Amino acid sequence: MDLIGIVDALGEPRAAALAGLFVGIVFGLSAERSGFCLRAAAVETARGSLGPRPAVWLLTFSTGVVWTQAMDATGFVDLGQSRWLASPGTLSGAVIGGLVFGVGMVLARGCPGRLLVLGATGNLRAILSGLVFAVVAQMSLHGALNPLRQAVSGFWVTDGTNPDLLLESGLGQRGGLLVGLAFAVLALIIARRARVSFSTLVFACGVGFAVALGWGLTAMLGRVSFEPVALGSLTFSGPSADVLMYLLAEGHGLDFDIGLVPGVALAAFLSAWAAGRLAWQGWDGAGAMRRYLAGAALMGFGAMTAGGCTIGAGVTGASTFALTAWAALTAMWVGGMAADRLIDGAAEGRAPLPSAGA
Image 1 (cartoon, rainbow, N blue to C red):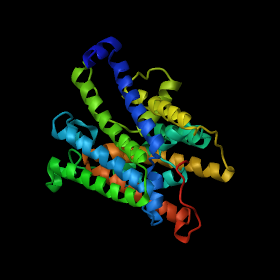
Image 2 (cartoon, rainbow, N blue to C red):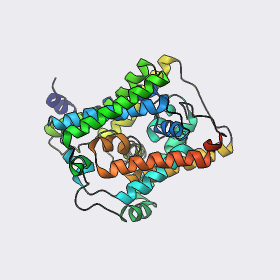
Image 3 (cartoon, one colour):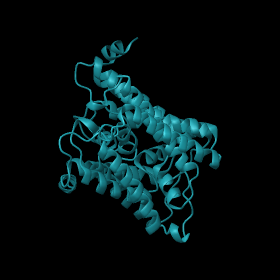
């Protein structure tokens, strides 16, 4: 059965949710097996140790960029139709939201995607932190924090559409592929020095490929669906809030984002179960609980203000070379590294390097 037949048989909403489920499964499996985590990569970098975690992140990032730019270059996907390039962007929101998010991910010991993966393996800290993240994200989008988010975002908005860094710099589409390949080479050099296993590198590529897969599937659905389907891919800020509202209230239909979150959780659970990594993990005390929940709240506001999380803005958005996505990604790195130095005291050697879990 071809895609048109699937859409006709299931209906457009169910077909979109199925696509999200499939992308989520690829991401969840790959992220659980590779230990992908921007927070861990930023902390390790801040402590002057370019090891496995930055290597995994760089390889994920480069894979997402190369595949996405290749699809755009061949005309399979038109990134100019994505929300990142087709509408104005907010530089103030990207920078301030990115910094707030970066601090939050260090406090919560994981970004939203990582918390979702860990929560599926039995980490109660990650489950509760993820719920707080989703609630605050919804508050920032439609609730009590919306005026503050709009004020921050409206301070510096780009004229017209969001600038395309490849066009503005004159690099063109080939330049995007070269940038992605350069990051891949850097990732492999670091991985070789850090003795990262081949299987970890493969699954790191899988995380990046999931981003490209999301672009491809939403583009294909858009071509065969009667109703408009937004071109997009992986992100966890909007989908987390959407899934929460889908479960709590009526009137929220199925779409790509609704299928994404369960797909990630299911694949991460099965991956951890197969590897014997399922384990209940709780809090180490009230102080730790305050830290995690404060971090989750900061991430919820920061992600909605920046336009996405470490995946949504940091890989999906950055793969389009939209100016504000790269600004948000840079701010997340800076915020995370600064928070580790100032809060965890890494500069004085008072805190150990982060583990793969939250």
